[in-house]
Length: 108
Image 1 (cartoon, one colour):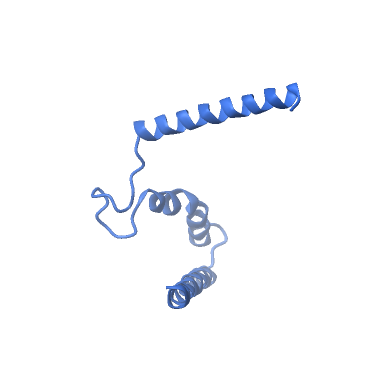
Image 2 (cartoon, one colour; image 1 turned 90 degrees about the vertical axis):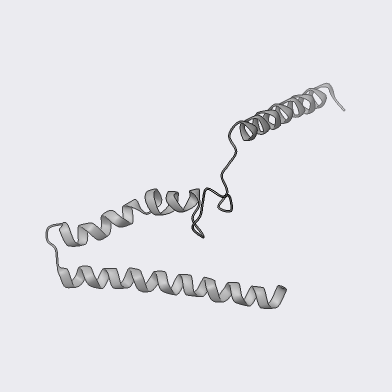
């Protein structure tokens, strides 16, 4: 190996050990709460649930509110949009549920 390759390998090794040490220290300092831990009593409720429904979907909430509050607003078209969103969500979740059942039957 050349001198440059040896120096690069040692630099990468030192960086990897530093990152590994920092990651283990961070995990030891603040454990990540899991949905199965006792502090979460409702099923399917974990830190990600609040993130998705509270922050990620905020633009969708604003869009739906604007259909009814904005100017010009049309109640019938707003309800049609809500119906489309509900239908799309139902089809996506239903499809994922069926896919989960198929995967469970085939592989387990």
